[in-house]
Length: 320
Image (spheres, rainbow, N blue to C red):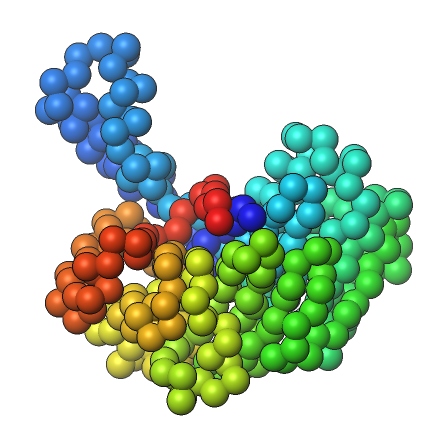
């Protein structure tokens, strides 16, 4: 099972501005020469020694995650990152051959739906897009994305077929070969995380989650989302120091993610839903703070050689 992260930003698509990118490249060039490199033949080796986000940033697109296993796939949320997925489907030729597409919707804040009108199967005869959600208003939301004057193509004129399916929370559903269970997250508007299982592997999707509840007793039935997950994708838009002014906004922190990972035996956690105002230095600073928090407050987790963590970046692929 592979997890593809096509968009990892929160709230609004966001990237460095032109001047900030220029400063970033200037900084990389200084490092290039400081490391003793002198010619173009050293560029590739210099870049390969750095992490991809250190060179290219964490991405600008909002939440869209794809889970794949051979020729089966699920899409989770339709933020602007779905454009990256759409481009890949087109370039690989898969867009021509695949006829069914399966989309899980966590909720309907704009950053999670703004990519809907830019997913090509909606406009292709012979294609069917299936939407799955707990919320009954899903069809109305999707219809509203295809209407004038905000979008030139109306829902009624779409050549592709669109079908809507209702999920029951805490009940396992088989969707395109994957076992999928929805669990309620801590968010001011109704929002659900998804536990996706196949081949004894578990991916847990929990963005737009403030993680007010972090213990089995507090979570109750919703604890099933996290238990022994091989990979947990967790909202860490803010730091704990930010939470005083962002309490109730529905977004979490690394501290809370580590606590959940420890309490539920999570093997790997990726933090995401990066704040649109967070530039590279801010994310690197947050990551350094998270490292210290892990060592000081969750030292048993830090000492576990099988536990992995990082900040997710656009284009990242994790194999489970």
